[in-house]
Each structure stands twice: as C-alpha cells, then as structure tokens.
Image: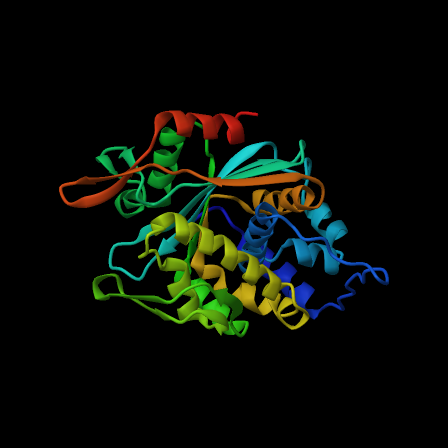
Length: 323
C-alpha cells in the first residue's frame, strides 16, 4: 500500500459531499467539442482516481475547490514530468494477473500526455523469472515487480504505479446504474477456469457490472487482444460520459468512500493531488496521444505469446517518452 493518508482524503471528501455545489453552466447556444480518445482515457483515469481518492477533474471544476486543494499542497503544485504505470487487475482467478497494462507519460509543464498500452501476452524478461508473459509478473511479485518488468522492457524510468481491482469496477458500475454502450458484435465465450462467462448480443444497451466486465475481458475473436484494447477505450469513453451526468456526479463522495479498498498505489497523498491537478491542466490545455504496442504471435510449448519487435518498441518509446 502506498503512503496514502485516507483520513485526510475522507475528511476532505466528506466536506465536499456536504457542501453546496455550484456547477458552472455553459453560455447559451454553446456546444461541447468532441474530445479525442486520448483525452477521454486520461480524464477517465482522473475519474477513477476521484472514485477512490476524491479529486477528479469534474469535482475540482464544478465544486470550485481549487483554492482548498492548492492550500493543502505546499510548494510545487503540479508534478514534474514523469511516468506512471496503471494496472487493471483480473482477480477472477486464483492467481491475480494484470489484465490491462498502460504506461502514462505526463508532462504538465509542456501540456502533454502520452498513453501506451502494452498487450498482456507480450513476451518479456521478468526479473528473477526469465522469459514470460508480461502480465504474469504481477502474480510473481505484485505491482512492484510489474513496474520493474515494464521499466526494463521499455528502458525508461517508471517511479509510480496505480492498480485497480476490476471487481471494484464491477460494483461501481452497478452502483451508478450501468453503462450505456453499443455492443458491436455477438460475444459468447465460457472459461470456467478463468471464471469467465461472456454472453452478449449486439446492439445499444445498458450493461450492468458483470456484463461490463465481460465486454472488457472478451478477446476471443480474430482481433484478439488488440480488439479487446479498442473495446476498453470505447467503454472508458462511455463510462466517462455516465460519470459526468448530474445524478451520478453528485454521488462521487459516497462512491469514493466505498471503493477505496479496490485501489493500491505507491503515490503519497501530495503526489495524488498533484497528479490529478496535472491531468486537469493537460486535459484542458494540452495534447494527448494514445497508442498500443503490437508484436508477432508465436507459440512456445503450446502457449501463445506476442513477441515484441525491438525496432517498433524503440520507436514508440522515443516518440512517447523521450520528447
């Protein structure tokens, strides 16, 4: 567990929940511009952190807490340029593995952020374990070993990590009344060993928590893990839209207090606040790009892997992390 002062967070968030919100209203005849996927993903990270920590982009804006937050942050308010590993954990199986692996590069001073998704089947060297799937590193040594593994693989410094238990996401989605999304195809797959039962029909519908996880975890078609990553991006956009709705928005304090236990991080309290403030600045003023590594499918001893192409990895690292 990171150095998080939960009483500090709880007290602030309870005061927010009891306050009188005065959301800003847009001028007449104004319309919100469509935002690119990178911004949707980034603000969704902030919203997820808001559920667990109490400070998201929307809350900072609508409750106008900037003065309060800044007063609690001595010295530099924004975090310096840094990299953060975000892991979505699949705890539906006995041995926990990271189901989603994203590396976020934040440059608040330059108003830039980049997000790189690493497929979970990527074949890498896991410290102390040899060659294995990158997501197995979590089962061997938790978030810290995964952080080291990704750091060595990409050859960049990644000082921070945030892990989110997807079972907490399931409960949160049920709490907010589901997420409206257009399921693009028939999805059916059963794997009792993985505690996975997917049975979704195509069309626009409201997915409850369990069906949402089925949609997020499904990858048993010709698109494989890459199609799954695309669906995750699509779902995050739909979740963000739902979280920004009035009735859901004002339930943030209750949600945050309920789901704190589903998140782990090595960020301390000051860093969390600086992280969210930095994301807000980048979201409003900056440029955000998102990409995914790929690789060549191979089989070793009957096990499927994605073998990364060194030149493509180096190109992605140079483009997104060494500017």
